[in-house]
Image (cartoon, rainbow, N blue to C red; front, side, top):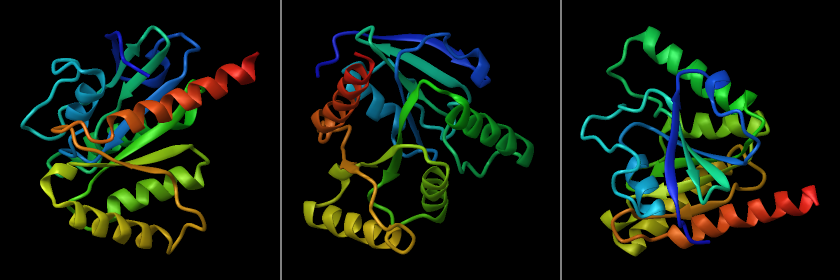
Length: 203
């Protein structure tokens, strides 16, 4: 798949203000500062599409972008940003979980994880929650260019070991870098495959 067009549609504070449309949606989420906006911009070859910021936790709304007029890329707020009040954190958590559990158009969640770090409890908890909730998802390791290939492989294996403590079968994963476009084709092929399966199911 090639991204020919990528357009911002709406920023919604709650799930029922998201687009009234039946097109499939793919949501991107991760801890604050995981490189979500950079990854979205790399996928769409548009450095200004998702707003990148030096300050973590800037995304506070559910942002919809229409890709090739065929499917939505959804930029969700980051979780686990410590400098927010408990009230703000609870509100964001409700928004995120409300969207993920209530949005029928959502077909897959991409959980972004910084490959440089050892498995973080907050990420593992979120991944386990998706599994328990029956939500299809894929783990996207980010910032692979910051490490040697050997270290990336070691860290991914460590993550897999951690997940196998609770998972019988590992979820799919893709290793990416916004800097050198690693994983771009894999991610877009993953989305295209699901879109094709959805269309075949409708025919």
